[in-house]
Amino acid sequence: MTLLTTVFAAIICTIIWYKKAPNDDMKINVLCYMYWGASLMWFVDSIFEYAELHEKFFRPAIEDMINDFYLGLSVIALGLIVWLIILLVKDPRGAVKASLSKKNNN
Image 1 (tube, one colour):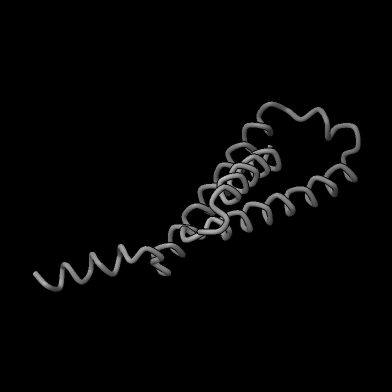
Image 2 (cartoon, helix red, strand yellow):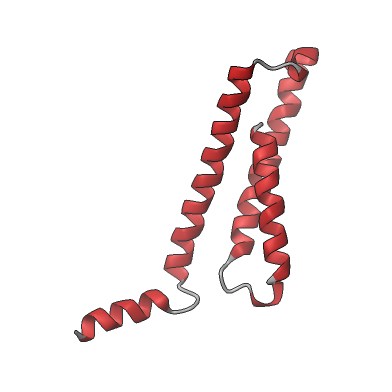
């Protein structure tokens, strides 16, 4: 489930990035790299888990699937938090700078 969750997030981000590719001022490419990297990590993890469990890999318990889904959602949330921090630091549209200068002028 972690693999599926991060792959879906990566696909959605890639589609959004591709639609705005020439003007990627919101740094969506960073989010794509993070989610594709996480997907690759979970893919490698699933290969090693399959090598260990063999046929049991395809019949996980429902509790394991729910735990894996929550872990996938946690990875997506962490990726969004890192992306927001990068966005606030880079400030591509100048919103943070304008807000801070407006505060200083008052």
